[in-house]
Image 1 (cartoon, rainbow, N blue to C red):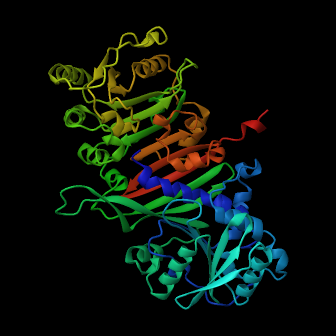
Image 2 (cartoon, helix red, strand yellow; image 1 turned 135 degrees about the vertical axis):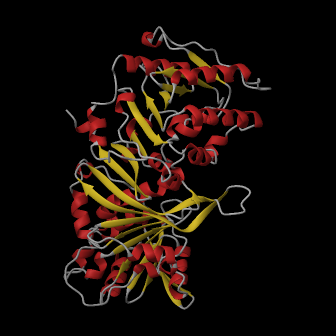
Image 3 (cartoon, rainbow, N blue to C red; image 1 turned 180 degrees about the horizontal axis):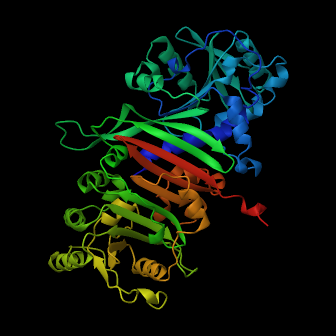
Length: 549
């Protein structure tokens, strides 16, 4: 979906501290003071890092993690192989160091690198005067005895390789000031390159300026590098590029019921990104609970006041180009012109449960408020009459609204639209046929990939069975701003049960850790002030159904 390039790593890093706290509590506990100077760990980080986590208040952070309700229910996130080993081998570190650890070791930095998997990470920490000897002795004591530890020289520096249980090898780089460890020796080599050649992340002007302005009194900070589309002058086509200067910054807060990430974007205005496009939109001033069925488990509400900018972005995404042809491209232009001329300033999409529990697929509907619904319906009828037929098109589906199951939808006419990607662009739901159904209801045009979804939606609205007032929904919106450019809510437990065409709305990372995330409600919101976009992420714990009487 349209948020994947922007949000995916942000979510990964914002929750990694759940595991961090449990894995390295003893390792990073503060005791005796140390007068040694503080080393800037960012001088070690290679410039290609895609995300970072920084904390210098580990004891405080761990205390917050211990109070999380999910922690008390024994739900932990095994996001990183590195932290799995830290939890196993460093838990007793303090027992072996009777005088405790220096203040430097209360500071930690974690960098994430491509490709995105649990091994491509580096953990850094500052060291006090006696810390290098303590850490090395501890690693040797608890490393596997199957193979002896080895030392490799790389550009005049020593990389220590320690065998670990399970066949892993831990690569470590020690100096009197810092320690860097990873399961990837090549990443430690890159750390040495960055440090010795002054080509670290701190040498990038954009990152240095952002980090210099870092706010104080923050337990942990997450930095996420963006991927964008270069819209520079003279470009004949859109070229996706990984930018080395554009970042989003998140402050992490943990409370008993959830995880909160409040962010700020640091992006160049010339780049075609979701964040920059949102900055061009006018704010939405209310939540769409009255326009969503009570059984909704996923929805988003998007401001499209600047339709040219928004459709320019959505049309560039790969998910909108499935089975693309000149015919479909022409239909897209027609429907985008239609929405630009007659549409309002919002797009609301939702997934909800059908009344029939035997249905294998959820209902999916996109709602587009209109300036003049009567005029819009006449325009649509005219377009359907004049649109040429598509050669070699898949069979046209039958128009059979299910009035027996949804009688209150009987009086609302439904139309089948020629194949196009408008529904996919604005909702993220992609059906292989690209046919879509349309219906006009209470000042809005409804779009869906099947007639059942339209009938079920109208039936729920007519019966007053709406999401507003449902406790889970009200709890989520109470943590969000009333004015925003985009908001998304997902009951991850329900999302995980859906077929592939629908689950793609949520980044794949959540599915790799489904046993953990199924206990959470996820919300993502983008607000804007004075031209700056603020992305905010909330994970609210639903509780463990096994523990509920």
